[in-house]
Length: 115
Ligand SMILES: [Zn+2]
Image (cartoon, rainbow, N blue to C red; front, side):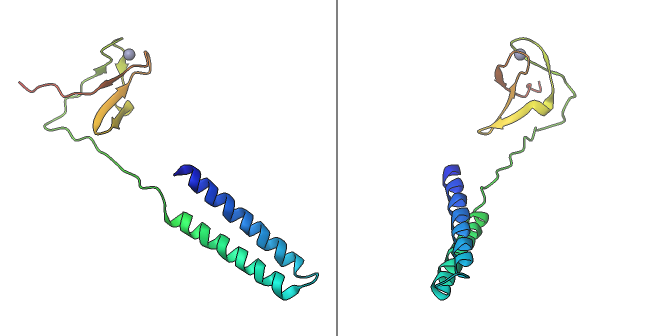
């Protein structure tokens, strides 16, 4: 997906350059045909750019909601017991995960049972 976008942009830019080259060359000779090619190239490059702009990647935002009141509790790494910041929580396929910056290991953030 990413490579096809890069390829599209490369194609659009080369078509634009080709169009400008033909427009410049039309001032020398074969004005009508070269101007036609120039306009066609520029128009198709703009069309490609428009299509690339329209098909932006979809951004999925996931929020973590905890049931019940949150106790301000320190999270500690279960492997090296380093204190961790809640801003490190990342949702990986629906599961809140924390990657410990000290030991580099990841673990799932779970709620403590309320009883
Ligand atoms: Zn750790």
